[in-house]
Image 1 (cartoon, rainbow, N blue to C red):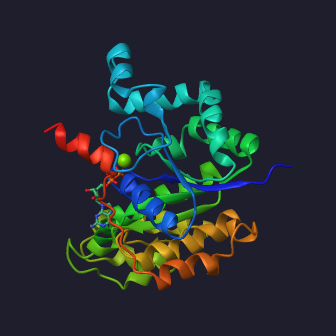
Image 2: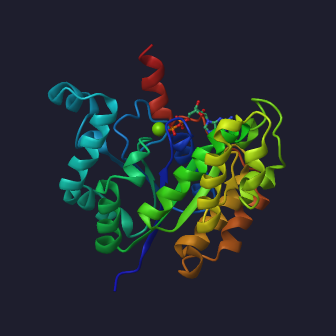
Length: 295
Ligand SMILES: Nc1nc2c(ncn2[C@@H]2O[C@H](COP(=O)(O)OP(=O)(O)O)[C@@H](O)[C@H]2O)c(=O)[nH]1
Ligand SMILES: [Mg+2]
């Protein structure tokens, strides 16, 4: 049997940092010696900060779909993912030469219903996993500012739980932009409270939370705690230690550490001993030049 290829499917609501993550993560993984390919499956990504190996824009364009079928951006994206499912052979043929020696990062659209409701993305990934022996972890990014409000935090928990249950892939939930977590004010609980998801009953007594919602909050929190599946790890994409810790977790979840490709300790020592310069805003020079010259 062919040896497996590893990678991550990067998902999460719009603006949670997926594209920035793919850029920063690919630079980090390249620095520790992995050969990385980024696959853009978000037709709504306009300028890409990374050089992508495969781009869904070559298959279908969101603007064409919206124009031809009189759809808004949300309906358009669902259409694009349905189209991708029907044309999964196109994606499979593009990935085939890459899986031999690349680590894959998939940048997905931010329409959350694609990951807890519709089956198109799940079917595409399941097919690739089978046909190309891919071992992917779903990395679900949630903007950490949602922790500043109990209602938003509960919705992030419900979204994470329903996505985990729907996809059924190895899964890591991430509170992204942790460097900005207190930019909307001081948190009411320690960070552990939000990452460990252990004592949600405190939320119903939160002083800003209307008494009207107390019973609803209690019931929803009980659902989340009964499943006992959701927790978060934190990420600041600019901080090498933060990215390194997340890589170790993902490597465990998709089995990379057991594949004997290259012992993690050796890989990580590369970044520990050398001066690390990477910039998640960095644009590959060719793209950057054309980006600048377009102004
Ligand atoms: N401070 C900070 N900003 C971030 C971080 N990750 C992403 N961003 C910013 O968040 C915004 C949305 O990021 P983007 O990657 O386009 O999100 P996407 O819609 O999920 O692909 C951009 O302005 C990024 O620069 C982070 O870790 N820290
Ligand atoms: Mg994006």
